[in-house]
Amino acid sequence: MGELMNTDLAPDLVRLARAADYAARQHIAQRRKGERAEPYVNHLTEVAALLAEATDGSDVVLLMGGLLHDTLEDTDATYEDLEQRFGPEVAALVAEVTDDKSLPKEERKRLQIEKTPAKSRRAKLLKLADKTSNLRGLVASPPVGWTEARLRDYVVWANDVVQSCRGLNPRLEAAFDEAHETASRHFG
Image 1 (cartoon, rainbow, N blue to C red):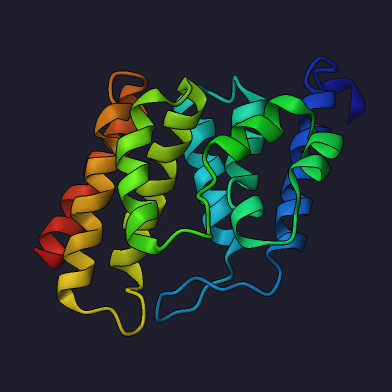
Image 2: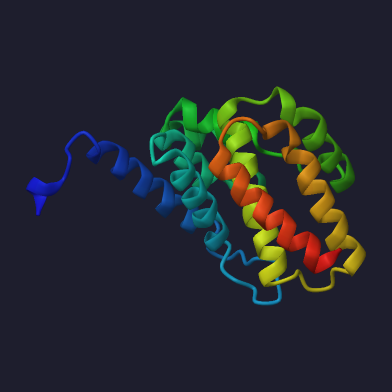
């Protein structure tokens, strides 16, 4: 079997597997907000899969960022830990897409719309994949206790965030547009 492995890919696959393992362990007790309360890691792997498909797996740093994108925001992981384990590029990407949880939710949402245009290409692709996964999740399993108005507001907000992410990857944009259209029909 070993002779079938492209040895140039081996280090990247190891790094990716380590990122998946770390993300799963960091988010082990977390569940999605939806009525099905799926393991949170399902969201992380969907984001990474969307990024892998959209880029033909050409950017392992981006895929690792997809797996790890909520670790600084939602777990006790630190920037230094991510940098030590996964390198400065991955840590910087995760930090770039991390909200400041000390701010009120409405302020964080406003800042995502305002600051996304200045973010790196990788961060914008990650935002697109994250919002795509979130919209799919809203439709498949709406968060418990969310009103129709709150669901509609989220759909509009997600679209506002990704507007500045357009023009970078037609496949990822198409996936977002499909998720957005489905969510808009569902909650509009």
